[in-house]
Image (tube, rainbow, N blue to C red; front, side, top):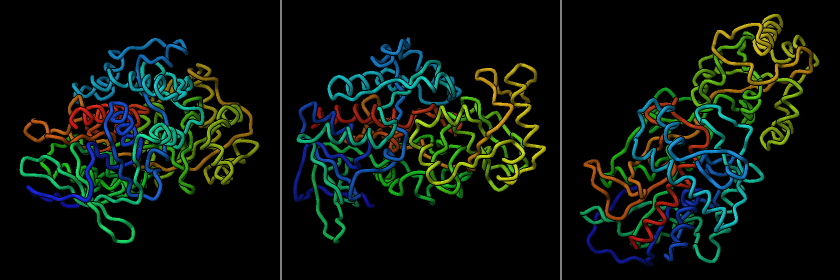
Length: 465
């Protein structure tokens, strides 16, 4: 993945705007550039665009949108900015945080108004984990696959998407102006494409164990739930060109990944009243304190596992989620008529599990206080009678949150604070708004960064071209 310095390069073809990566960031950038009148080519290394976007639930957090107004949600960019700064303990970049807060809403509205994306606001997520009002925007299927599919279809006829095109070289002059890229085809054929502006949309580095151990050593051996192509190529190209990076230790974790199937266990089960217990049959944390940091809490338990325990009410309310349907179909959900039977089924002490459930019920009824600080009164209590259900989970690394430093147009910045001449980045390739650690991640911030910076990058690249 070298950066090749040259003054004169004859390319096989040239295009004004070139995008590397056909996930949510790349396709949004391409769509925005096309809307601005630029000719744009997207290079995707896989045979078909899927990537991390297709593995996500497809939620995008955004403020002051038409969809929020339609649901009666009052919000503002200033409120979202305040939430970002509070969640990150004031340790994220204020300029970037304000840009995302200001531009996320217009990005959603643009996709809805100009490209018929039927976003609506998911009220089930309420104000958990840092958002002061409901901000999670989703498509009907609540899947990243639908989001990516709609982005691809929106660009048909105006965006040239080339698959099986693995970019392996970046050509630049001695002033750091990108001239083009070299790509490798599956049959070993090499091609070169010149460009006036380059957008890096190759996601983060979660699949690169060497980079994870270097920058996030605490998750160096943890399970990884992401696309195998997220190996940090775009970040490494930027670094070799002299770009600045920031918050490289930051990441999004998740404390409810089905350990045997690799399918998400919907956190709604916990937000709506469910609990997590370890192999001793007891709770070990406030499950609603930090959805990202819960990954470390679970990994710290015996065997690095926990069980999500819930009742029939919660089973019924979560049947609509594709992930829950998949878990059930794969046999990952255990069920029993009572707590003692469930304990035997999942291999925890029956007396401990019964006492844990009874205490959670008492907390929800205002008869006890949770030693971990969770407010169970926000939801109806768990049932005092069965049936009960459980899913075995572990903690996992989902997305890295550090990356190339960008300005408010998604232009990549050098280490000395000056802008790169014609290089842009977004999504996981760029630094996020999560601050320096695991605790700063706001729900749906990943795809928010993808589409918001993607739109800004596409618009700016089109102007550059």
